[in-house]
Amino acid sequence: MKAAIFEALNRPLRVTEVDDPVPERNQLLLKVCRCGICGSDLHITQDPVFGARAGDVLGHEISGEVLEVGPEVQGLRPGDLVSVAPLAGCGRCAACRRGEPAWCSQFRLTMGGYAQYAALLPQQCRKLPAEVSLADAALAEPLAVALHGVQRAGLQPAQRVAVVGAGAIGLAVAYWARRLGAIGVAVLDLLDHQRERALDLGATAFLATAGMDAAEQSARLDEALGGPPDTVFECVGRPGLIDHCIGLVRPRGTVAVLGLCTAPDHFDAFRAISKEVQIAMSVFFGMPEFERTLDALNAGQAAPLALVSGTVGLDAMPEAFEALRVRSGQCKVLVDPFG
Image 1 (cartoon, helix red, strand yellow):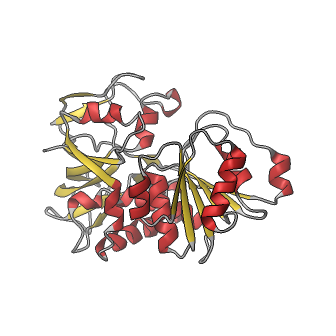
Image 2 (cartoon, rainbow, N blue to C red):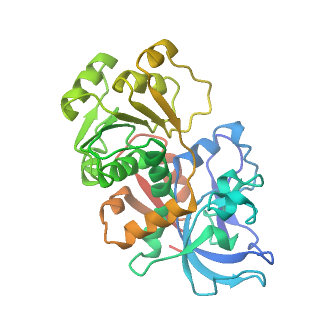
């Protein structure tokens, strides 16, 4: 099959022919229809902490068609259309039984979406509701990450919300915050590229902050929301941004951290404790949240589809992948392995 493979840190992915995956007895073979390019994949190709190895096929925001099932697979059959959660556990422990494989002792993050076929566990897959296309279903994973973050923050209706970072996850957080009752949602980003997309997804304000110091950002944010935010979501993952969010949030407010930062970070603990700020860390999601995102897509909620800024085939994928390292009007780029 054709796949885009990782070769080495700080080198572009390379499209080549590799062996087709062979599913084990408890796995299924999936024809990949779409796979979203995720910011974490960009990190994986640059940061040794993730342990990527030459020949690895990345990509974890997957939708596709079941082609074969192993003899131990139940509940799915060839021809089923599914969206895939990249969270694999043992399937038997208490965490897996309650739909939280990320907390299984055997947890692993599965990849393989930047290829034409993938071998997966059936418990990672959910059949698509009637109105959800295979193209749209690749959004379920990033939408679930954002929903989990909003729920980890304990967001309440009629709260004021700020989202720092207008990438796909930050914009999806804005979508869920408004959907779950936030009275105002302001998205902050250095540049203005994602203003219209943020507003389409439910944001009530957008602040391009390049050239603003922290005091001006805080003043402009309070003006946009009619008061300081109750909850601030950090959706970038750069050192110093947790501290920045602590400065933006109201006293006794919440800072929710979804940004993936692998470098050591610090914040002003005295300021945080003086304001009694709560800090909530968020990673991955549970399967009920994953299913809820599919339900939202099935309910005719067109807003999340605004995340998609383009679709490319595998041959064009490495160039599109590298282009996402630079801020632009691109947001969620999908890969069509057969396009």
